[in-house]
Image (cartoon, rainbow, N blue to C red):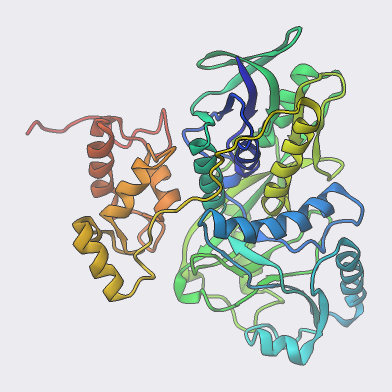
Length: 480
């Protein structure tokens, strides 16, 4: 019997698990994928929103601003990269300037630090590659960028070392309320828990509706992206938004935390909650918008696109976060409808959820809670002297496996052997960036598979891209 089961291993679920691991409880996280951040969290903009876009007085607004504050704090404590590069919402038509004033007023009411309007001359000094037609922009200095993988991995690892169990490839198929606990039926058997936290992303409505008469509906909203080579990574220094529309913040152009440039996302509501394929029609439209953007001075070169990808947002029709105990199912807590700015808000959602549970159940706090963590050592940013010192201690730091991103064998070995370590190629990619460069794993995959097999004992034929059903090999063509 667990005290708490968290369902969902994305940024929301791992942040909740990390905050709950502060308490002396039996804690478990169930995830239907083979790794953390394998659902909604694996494909989004990676933007740390400052909080001006949310309607004042909403839970979204409160948690966005608090999450922004916590994100930079936790990045230092848990050793994952963030960059406070600031964000701009650019107006290119004088008649629409009033929309910036609305956003400014929202930002001030929400308590966003330093938010202000910048005029054309200052704006073009900030971003020389903006269109000369720019009129003005809203500037929020606390906006930033992050890799969602890094956040989920850091939170998950810290929760794990503080006693949280992680069970992957464990899909929840049913939830039954008993007198004093819940039975959580899964693809790997039934688990019992006094408390259940629903952080299942686009599937949060299905889990909620298993236990409550008050039904909710979560819409899967697909966003598609183009990722450009690092050669264009400095085109903009800040996250550059268009004025928002009815479907969200619109297509933006921004640097990533790792130095690429991306364009996106689109916004298309889909019925299939596994529909993370990209579509030629939508990508063609995105290319057109990128090449005829009202934001850029130049036409962005599409021959620098190294990949495209898509992700799903968990949109609730009321466009608000649901973070609460379900009224007609005591002990069942929802973290549902977590769409943008959900990534930024996730540390604050974790904090709030742990507070709701603590207020009711009064679990004792651990005296030996570990609140720091050290991430995978990245050799790319080290000096020659620092690299040489690492190689002296461990020669695997001298073996480059991924030439595009300069990832060493030691980094891959570390990723595999960490708490909740990588067990698939995508798991290694999330932790090290192996395979994310220009060749998109075209050269480094075989060597990475060999390392994964060696370190885990998994036969080469059973190595997968992302868990069961995604085997990289089908068999041998000859015996040694």
